[in-house]
Image 1 (cartoon, rainbow, N blue to C red):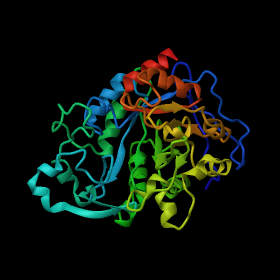
Image 2: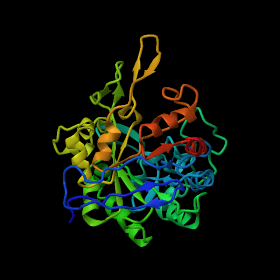
Image 3: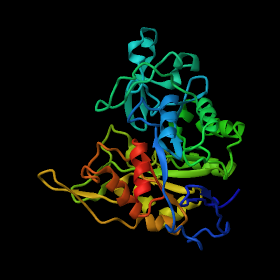
Image 4: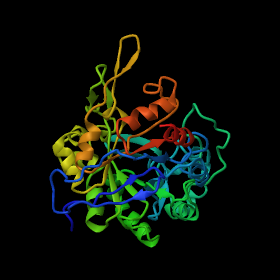
Length: 379
């Protein structure tokens, strides 16, 4: 068992992957911090090309690949019969037609997910056979629903087959960036999502550091567990409940909401009082580097904004987040870039990407792959 993950990767000017490793005995600051010289950021298609097609479908992933994504991102939940399928959350009414199918009416139930009570249809109450009767729909009301009801819910195995059958527009292997959704919740149901993911990656020959794979999670223990069993690249996701008027980040989650907005839920469940703020400190970055290769923050961790009384939003200078992460050889992949969110773009999405590229990020999660690809080309 290693004390620290071997760190990877920068994507150089031809967008080919170059790997390097660090001294595996050093558990403090690294001798070879990541630099931003000659680096082009990874384009990670957030849930596929979800700005065009319903998210987490084979069709959306394929469209993202055609648009130039380096990686496609499947969020993973588990079925009753222990199959990994791609849905943004364990509950499914917002992204499928399950509420319209009378045969599944009795499966609507109430569960507590990361401290929040949810009444919905949960994938963990469905077999794969039942899941395959559902069709995907657009999750956002401000995007086209013309493709609702056309596409199936894919398994991780089907997504891997797709990725391995394609190459990126740069003729590289298509990367996978799976997120384990709510592992604590799944494990309480005797659905160990970590083991299921490792088994699928092993079966596909992708359970290694050199594979074009990043595994991400908002919880900590699942990543530590995988680190002890595999050399696959890992990314710690972090979040915050809100941005205050002065641009500071609020980690205090109101009672009844998702605790995981402010802290890793496995920390909370174990009585650990650290919030995601811990991960922004030098101690937190050192801790993260003991098991992960990267860190995935919400954008305000890097460039926050203040809000005036009249609603005007003013961007603040970039924080030291990226520099501190790079000191510990952690890649930084912020989320999520959306044309509809104009706080950073001011109506010019391409300029928003450039703002974060200039801040030194190593990749971006985007709903608009084509815009992100263009922004890399013009940066």
